[in-house]
Length: 224
Image (cartoon, rainbow, N blue to C red; front, side):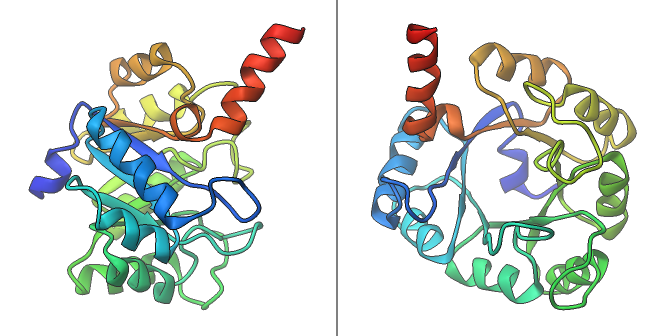
């Protein structure tokens, strides 16, 4: 196993992402957020967009999991081989991409995209929405399987918290491949639960790096 992936075992990965129109939407701000997360003990940073990847890579010493979101429907997490290669060129140590079977904009299949990246020597994280996605990603040779798209790809219902059922299924079926739990981990207790369910690492984003949403949680608790 690659030492960089081994270093994530039993650790927290922090996702630092902000989007167009949001107050924190600036690469330097995301880089500062990533540095703060690293100082808090994050073992890696997950981030999106070439500018953010580059800025964060220049600030932190931990691995950077990079992706590029384009669009809002269908395959939009690193949707093409070009997007993936651009993320790597920007500084991503690991590239994450949509691992569903949905059509990709460049006409390549997921397996063809992964094969090209493996030929490049890249480390690949598969963002899965179902056990079938995980099976396809494992067959394609992905280094990490993630539950990122559980509840978002139409294959499974959206759970209130992390999809521990899918996580446990993936861990049981692929004991030789690191399975990372990502998606709707909003409390330390949920993070502990996914680790106890066998996750290689837990990815937390909103609950750490999205103050607008966190403020909404507290406002609703105070006002209701």
